[in-house]
Length: 377
Ligand SMILES: *Cc1c(COP(=O)(O)O)cnc(C)c1O
Image (cartoon, rainbow, N blue to C red; front, side):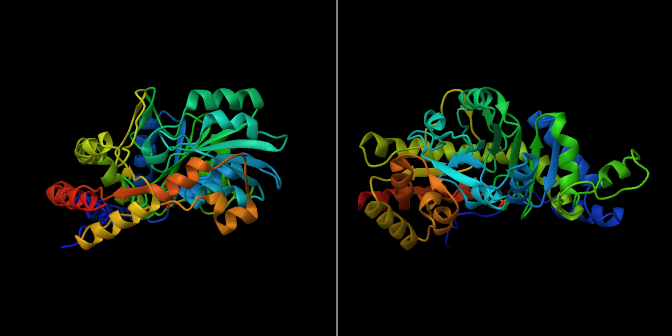
């Protein structure tokens, strides 16, 4: 049997929730299950408002609309991230300004932000890589001093904390992902977290095609109409029903993932001591959600050989990201500020090991194969 890199975990309650939504006869967005997910997200994240979206990409696009970006405005973000972090702003005509990452957490290097600020800079979009938080206090302080908006791409960050605060509601706006490769899933799915009430009403409008339909449903206006720009960013109740089942098991899922992560981490220590690889680093003031386990190999050649040997043993391991500053669209729409050495080197050396609920049964096999692969490097 081949061990896949990812295998979506299902709790067993998803289908009965979907059947319930079917019986309720309300299939479009914002029904019973959507409201249940909103309440949980608001309580858990401490955001004033949470709104389900059909993806994290959609939540980031809503964030870009909410901060009123204009063509030529600049948004500072890390180069080492998924394309959606940049596309959301490019779609508004803004220019992504890519920064290098820290060598320890692989998050945006907050010490480089100030030098990258220009009169056009409007926002900073941070990415909590592998569910480990960026240095939010420093970032919020810089943003306040320069009057910049702060958006968190917390796609990987559900159940993680920074100094006790859940990720996604530390900055003004936060985006979560429930894509099937993330910890809590609905196939495709996401949420926008809105820290303060001030942006909540406009977020509702943007999500509902630019109409005040949400107010209408609450009986606050007697007819609804087109009041602002917007699109259709809300998921169907069927998706929310699926997600509600996942949220019910969210803590168990996280515990299971952490147990696998801890085993990888203990296993890899001997190789790190010998200088053969580097393990993930989680600062003491952060807790993480075991979104991913990665190894940093010494160089591209050894990573390539490691992945090939794991594949021969039937184990799928993967790497990412092509740095955005060197991707064709990144060059066309954005620019980078300063040296990108850590981003470039990380992109060549990082390898992700399988991590999914149920993998615990196969972990001995994965580790034995990894021992073999590393012995031959
Ligand atoms: C997965 C991911 C996204 C995109 O999430 P979707 O829900 O698939 O749109 C965005 N940013 C980061 C950092 C991600 O890991």
